[in-house]
Image (cartoon, rainbow, N blue to C red; front, side, top):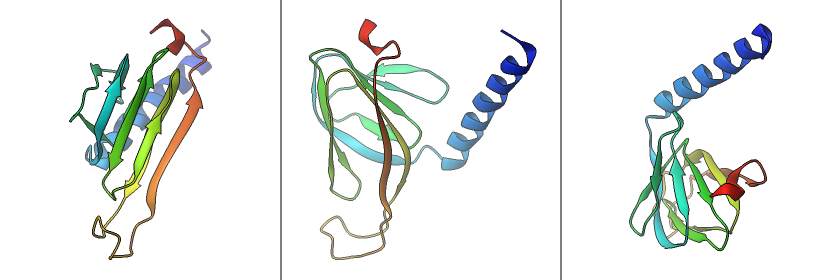
Length: 123
């Protein structure tokens, strides 16, 4: 790996760590349903198995294996379904209203969902 590329990787990792710390690991949602191999991966790369009742924080990634799925109830009451062989990162989650929707003021969840073709199939 070239020094320039390695330096860029270090900067990206440090930026990610700083961003996660600034986000204060705010809780974005809670797992309502988990089937199969579903993992939660924190910004520093620590992994834990998801189960019903597990919390998902801003900055964390959810990875599902083959024949695996999860449903996450977000802080605004919305439901996010993560299908098999997927990766979903909660990049930002802002909600300041009531769960029943009577309070406006949410930017809603901002998530990125990409196919897990980059190694998640080994799960």
